[in-house]
Length: 305
Length: 247
Image (cartoon, rainbow over all chains, first blue to last red):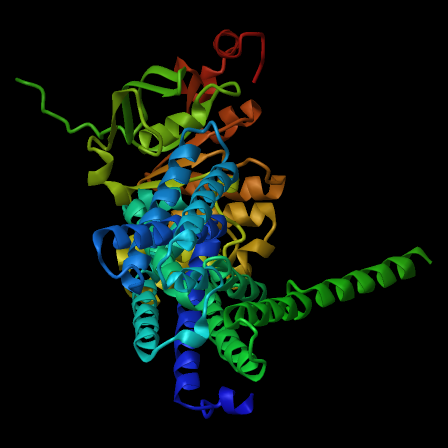
């Protein structure tokens, strides 16, 4: 495991580690803003809604005589249906007849149900390569090639550049959207940019972490970071660091325990970081709260005497 | 001899035929009203009279059915920086990771530019705005840890930092204690004395004649408008609230 942590477990292992770290970095940074915008559920719906697009792209590719297994083709399909699901959830909620969370749940279940049906059609076909599709459900980080790692690095670079440039407009939007629009900021465009980054991270994470768990890497590092800091730039940096660190440690652990799905191990490491933050955060942690409560109790008893 | 033409100061806010509806219910109907160019103005009226709606519709935050809005004689887009809005405290995200100073500084970004760190002079201006509302001591505290009254004052500091000429305030005294209310009234009166116009949605009829110069009595339509000292007559209040009340 030490060898894996220090990138000395061979070229392939180093490629997987580097790709996952870049992805964790991007997911943590983008997730910070997604969480603060209250879009955690939307992100989950978008991730699940990639399934019908991926399966549909496979079937369409087959019918058109293309290579149905080509990853960019599959991800394009996934991106399309994920966007449609987000639009549908927004449209449902905007009418005011259905609450936000219900609208998102409807969009998620409709698209995932449709995806499951299409996937069963694909799996009944007498062609090879369906295994790649079910790999997108839970991810197969070990299958990451050098080109994939470079793609992850590019995604991380784009995410960090956009977030860095838009830090102050986004922070105005997250704190008070009405005021942001009064100040003349293009709040719709900012929201679309944030949604776009979220989709980019979700799609980039499908092959490695899978569509069921990718939302965890957007939300869990951000939630842990929020417990430890009260400034936005620090939270974003910490969240990105937690994402990258969880990916690094997760890859190393799963290298030591072959057979364990890497994506799931990464998520569990991230959750462990979150649990530590929840316990030990100086201002918001459980231990600090218990201590303050005990001190209060002692003071109240002393006063009553 | 023809009279010398005098450039009369323009009303800070001017509404003509403003109507607003939520779905199929009209909440404001054909409101035509000119605010004074400066001074403290209270918008009063019963619950559901459309007071907050009037501010939001004027600012274009909710769509209008009909009507025209002018700020200092111009559309909002032309005078954005001269118009400040203080939302209700519950309308913003208090769990957002920021300090009181970060929030006050947001009032300076439209001037300083959104794509670079705030220059030192702008930061000083944000600190000065916090000091004006007595919040300089909590400048570096996370906003989520402040009391309701402190949060209200921090929001006011953000609006002050913007240095607008017209302040639109949605219930600036809602849920604050007497000390905070007094501090805020002091700030508003200094603004009015400096020639600014402050239009505040207000609930407490008893303080209107004392703290405000003008008042607009609203109940879906304009009931009456004029000097705060005399406007809230028993007749006007009965017309607005539908029963006998005294200020």
